Length: 248
Image 1 (tube, helix red, strand yellow):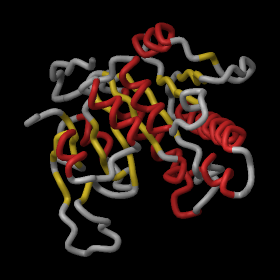
Image 2 (image 1 turned 90 degrees about the horizontal axis):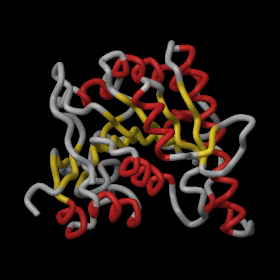
Image 3 (image 1 turned 60 degrees about the horizontal axis):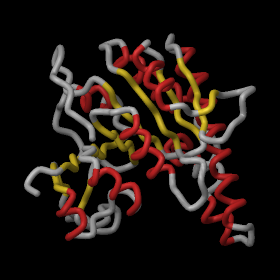
């Protein structure tokens, strides 16, 4: 179970797990990797890291390939999911390069062994890297088919005892309807796990959400494309939507 870190120098969190979608790394390109966007994300990570915050990152692979989409095109689902896991490794290597150019020390760990480019994921080693001030990127999802990178983010956040799972998206929080289709959709500032289930709100896939709920891992959903939002999030400013056990 995650325990909230004491506020230090105005920070609300000491260790975070940042979940980035693969589509976000593509920005407006639709697919591939937007190098400028990746560089900006790296700079923002460097800014919060300079405050002493320990940072773990999980990146999706949807900008390259999704297992579910591949299976819909006739590829075996397990093979497609493994292809998707390899796509996350590509994204992590791109982000690692940008982070190191921003002056950070990093480690890429992967749930599928590929020793020439990344370390195998070992929980205690990953925590030690964080304690030494390295940004740790968790690649290849959980290493298992049929699980999304949302599930991987929830699992890794719990395993490293993160204070919060920061889910960076293309919208500025959780709404009661799709804001792109419903102009008057209501955005929630905070919502409980129970309310998410009762109102069938879209936060993350069921397995990932269940992991967070069962382990009291708070989730903050926020807009990745608004520059400076990551800093605002770790300083406790009111952005996005917080999901926690409050009121349950």
